Amino acid sequence: MVIKGILVTLLSPMTNHIANGGEKLLGNASSIKRRPDERVYISGQMQRHAFFSAMERLNIEDTNRGATHVSNGDGISNAIETDLRADLGGFMHPSAGNYSGRRISPMSVTPAVALEQSDIGRDLLIRLKMDSEGDRDQALATREFSQSDMMLMNFHLDLSSLSISKKFEYGEKSGNKGVHLKTLFVKHVAETERKRRAKMYLEATRSLTDYAQQARNATTGEPQTVLIVFDSKLSRKASRYFDADEKERINILAELDEREATYFLGNDKVGDVSVGKAYKNAFEFLEKNNLYDPCEKDSIIKTFEEAFLPNFGLKNQVSTDIAISQTEIPFNQQE
Image 1 (tube, rainbow, N blue to C red):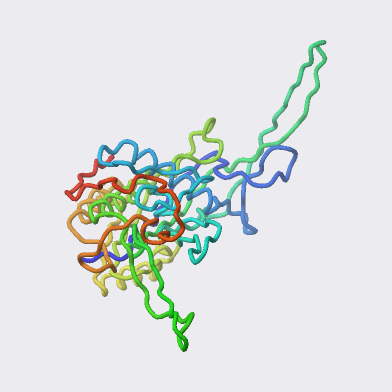
Image 2 (cartoon, rainbow, N blue to C red; image 1 turned 135 degrees about the vertical axis):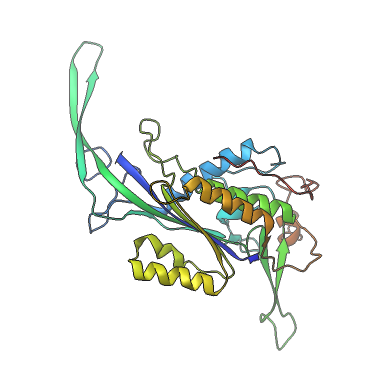
């Protein structure tokens, strides 16, 4: 199978949590984010933060990482060949000449939303301040938390853009000047490295732990139930699966079967296939099948600078002679 998209939709139970604090509604402690229907949610930005924190840990532990790294969110480079956040998460840089400095993220997420209305509790906090003379001053604040939620999260990876960039050619002669004539695709890493990154994407979706207040509260987004879809087209329709009624679920899976997509369902509480088993089966499938590649078969691998910045005399952000192994890369799956 040629895989064009990988969708992961999952349910994760969270209790007594403030996984994503919002504005200060009551006093001077953060309030939990919630929708008008009183269901708490975790913003897409926080979901991306948790995802790339997980990916950074996985990449550091991988002996085949080479010179790759996950940049900080406040300092994203354009070196797609080495910066995993730049590759999967995209970037926006100031324009320079005919280089727009923009990359649309191949990895997309939805906010995590509770399936049902949330029960919000409040802790009373007392903050004491004592000066050198022994005088005390106190301030009262409330801190919100949600009692118990089943959070629905969705992740999608577009393989047509993973480690690949689009390059546009415009006419320069009179009559077609400024007209878009051709779209080219540029590959930035070897196919084995693309496969390694796809595997880390999949592993990161079950390793989500870095949420707000993580230093004090062990909030986790690790799935209790998961649906992993390897699709032959770019579709996110299956992200509705766990929020749908029985009839819609049947039709969603039937549609996937009709176009010969492959999917794995796992549930730690019901049935014979656990979440761990579903991921194990998904990794085995991913290893045996190919990622969609819009580039020519013998496409030359170029760094981002070589592809887009040849005329600006910019310094390489990393050495362009970094060799990425052309051999198959085993992936240490974590159960």
